[in-house]
Length: 117
Image (tube, rainbow, N blue to C red; front, side, top):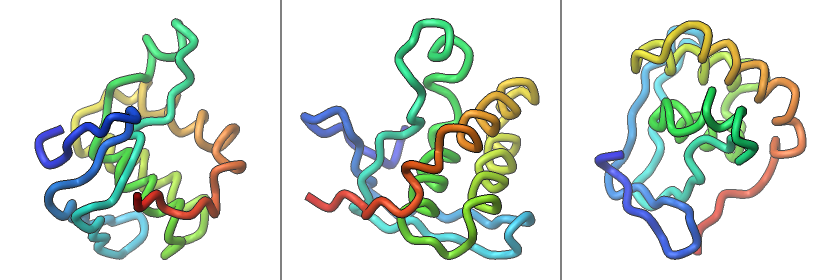
């Protein structure tokens, strides 16, 4: 990702704001410089990572931001991930897999505080 740098702990820190205009949420989201993300939280199980890992990084950053700040409800945050993935050219089948993954496994991450250190 162009506007993020890797940290020693495997996470990434934004070096510039990431702005996304969502038609689904009818809002513009600005992920601030310094926001820390793990990009897409895809399990490192080989088949899962092969199918959905390493794609749609910008959409994943926006999704992480929405999950930690709650400007919208969880279902809308997940819909924004799917929408933003489409905007960045992720194929429909992969967007659907990612959306199912966050709907099924994302609940435990809803409400986590952003990493700032």
